Length: 380
Image (cartoon, rainbow, N blue to C red; front, side):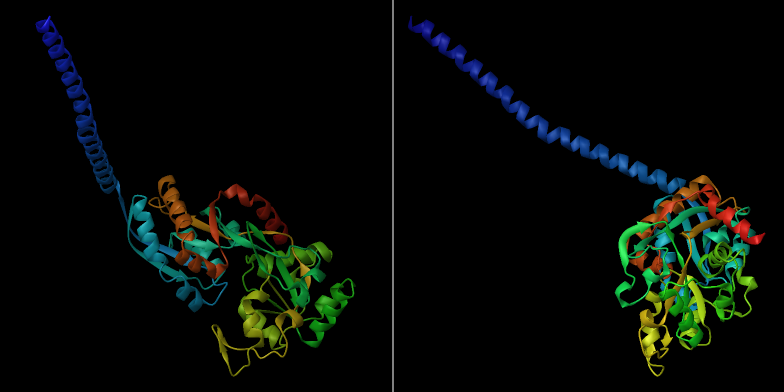
């Protein structure tokens, strides 16, 4: 009996040891061997992917970019400093090795369109009107987004007075308006007073004033849309029908308005926000843009809106069709992704802020068919 009991106990003990050994084996094998193998495999796959990307990267050489002079050229060059380095870095992540980036400012809007058409530059920041004029030889790939404004009214009275100072909203929009501004000259104040009283301006009222307009017929806010505003409200009359016009960029136009050298100017909405400081700064003091303009009251009080245009589609980034190395689906996608990524960084926002852009979205030529039809009507 004792022998039987001893045998049973030995068998039970051996089974317990065997089970314990099996349990210990499971605990030791899983954590030590499998994760190490997985990590090694992941590292190997990452190395292979990186090697493939390096092997497939395309050497593009120099990339030439051009901006239009809607702001002073020196200001554009200073503000866009650093864009080249950002593009080289981001395009590298998308398979393109760019050796250098050349950034220039054209002498006019049309000059940028001509350079892009000829392939003298690879990409250009163009107003939509300029793009349309040169869209046979160029192609839009990105459209800008901007912060909307606190005011979007078509009634000029709603834009005037300290209580209606324009603020930027947080909403991103794909359009803006142009405004027709009357300055502090006696004639400008006469016209502003009529609008404030709810009286309609006549063609004779407008033709008796001196206007400052853009020298670039393809400038949306500085020329084409103010022309459309006149055509819609004054029996087809255009800017070219006015008796007294001079030409300048937006900064020069507001400065002439402040000096009472002109009575009316045209600009994007709301240009007054960009020149508020310059307007009141004494002439013997300076702002970031230069000497002040020395006005006795705020720009919101002295510069009144007398007309509002319809919506203008935002600016474009367009690419030349003349160079196959950039005008292909692969590079276009890489550049779109790179610029959208750059626009999402603090430095990128500072750079594209020169045109009050806040971001970009992919675009296609058909997006601008409506504006194309409007410009054709102006040219008739």
